[in-house]
Image 1 (cartoon, rainbow, N blue to C red):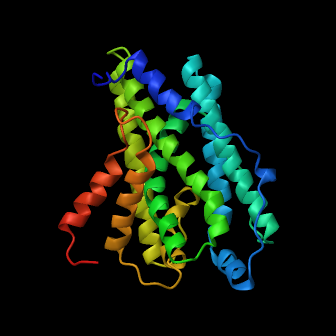
Image 2 (tube, helix red, strand yellow):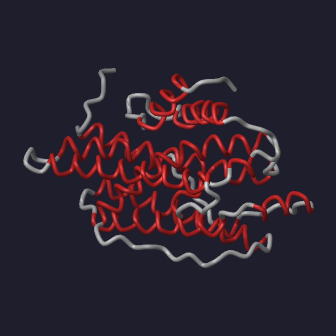
Length: 280
C-alpha cells in the first residue's frame, strides 16, 4: 500500500472511519456500578478533582458539538458528532458514578464557544496534552490498586475513546491545513500554533500553582493528582513519564498505522527524559 497523502479525500475517509467504525453504543444509565468496600469508597472520595472533571467534560462536549453543528462536510460531521456524543457520555458517566457513591461536587456548567473552530482547536490540543498524562495516571492507578478492577473496566473504555479523539484531531488539523486555499493557510497555521502555546502555557501554569499549593485550572484536572493516584507508592516523575510514553503508544496502536499520531507531547517528554538528570 502506498503512503497515505495527507489532505486527500482518502486521508479524510480513513481518519473519520477510525472514529465511526469503532464507535461503541451504550447508555451511561445502563452501567452497573460495583459496591465498594469502605476504604475503596474513601479513596474515590479523596480525589479533589471531580467537580473540575465534570466541568471539563461538559465544556469539551460543548466545543465538539458546536463544531459538528457548523461542519458542512457530511463525512467530517458524522465523525465529529459521534465524538460529541462520547464526550457528553463521559460527563454523564461521571455524574452517575458520583451520585451512586454519594460524592458531592459543585455543578460546573459547560462553556459554549463563540467561535466553533477555535474552540474545537483549543479543545483538541488540550486533549493531546491531557490524554497523554491521563493514560499514564490511569495505568498507575490500576497497578497500585487505587481503582478497584470493576471501575478500571468501566473507565478503560473512556481512555480508549480519548485516544481515538486525539488521533482524529491530529489528522483533522493536518487535513484542514492541506485543504485551505493558500491565502487562508497562514492564518489557520497561526491559530494552530497559538492553540498549542495556550494549552502548553496553561499546563505549565497549573504545575507552578501545584508546587505552590494552589489549585489548577478546570480543564487541566488530569495534572492535579499524581500523588493521590499513586496510592501511597512513591513514583518519580521520570517513571511516570515513561509510563505515559508506553501507554500513549499502546492506546494508539490499534488504529490505521498510516494515520498521523500526536507527536508533540511525546517528543517533548522524550526530550526531557534524555536531558533530565537522575534515574527512576
